[in-house]
Image (cartoon, rainbow over all chains, first blue to last red; front, side, top):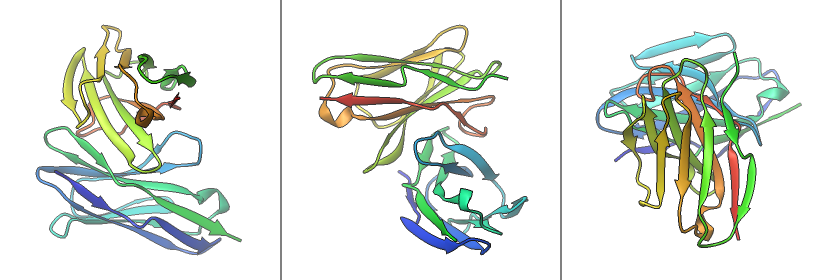
Length: 109
Length: 114
């Protein structure tokens, strides 16, 4: 089976940087996704990592270490609109997706 | 292009009834996957359909079933509803499938079982 752990809640200040960690245990790893979900809305895609290293996309970056079963999502220059739940999801080469329970980020002025 | 459309958005059922939810994917996407989201269990994978065939299945009882039509629209059915089936049911479409593709989620169907 698959096991994904991420912190339940985090709080940060507008303009700051926050790092949301995700650790996983799986067999047949085939990529890790990060999604953002605002309250009452559908999740939206943020990033995809399948190889080790850092993927940067504007204010958001995602890092993966397959040997450590570890990823993080880095959000820079935080804005109030970044307050949301951030979901880490792991895919296997059997085609199954497992989502973490999500990290609720609250950005304060 | 139009996004993923799910209907109905909200519905209320009673225990023992059955429900059918519909999902229309983004035009050109052949993969539709279904998820159950609850506060206690998070987002859990139900199944994926690709070109009318079920390609993967999560760990849900047989009361949960689905199908996909030739136009890629998908339906999921839950029979003999239980209180614990109350949840937000999300569908996602993808060009290449859940294994490698970015998922585009619909707004969801919120089911309440009384």
